[in-house]
Length: 170
Image (cartoon, rainbow, N blue to C red; front, side):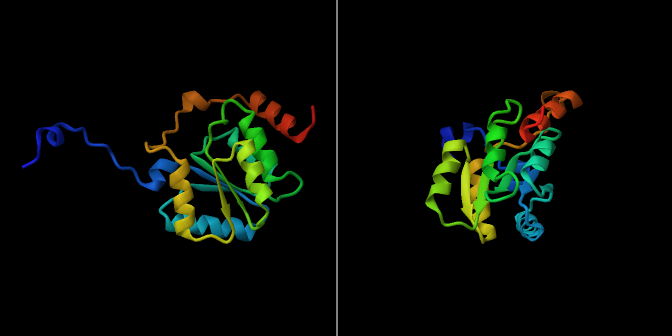
């Protein structure tokens, strides 16, 4: 028989990784790598995946749609993943977006820079589905991701201003 404390304890809902993540944005200048990451996410049950080939495109997309997590390559041209991370952390409406940096580089300095700039996690390529799952579980809140349109409604003028600011044009 259950004790009184156990019987009166509220049940904490358990959410799947896909429910916790909502939409995921994969940013990498390699189309092959974007496809690989998408397939891994699909294996993990995450179907709502968008991708971007560069930092500027990713920033534009992030200002139009909320994401539960961003998985971004470090080394891209013309703007690195670090540039995107800095722009995201400096933009109040998207600053809290969980951000996972990925790279094939074993340079420990990259990990330090990623942490300093606000990355939530860092993963080395190539990685397994289990390794990516662990990183996502580390950075995602325990609750279910909810798209609240009233909280993320942005006018085209605001999006345009942010894109110009990111790209350095005025």
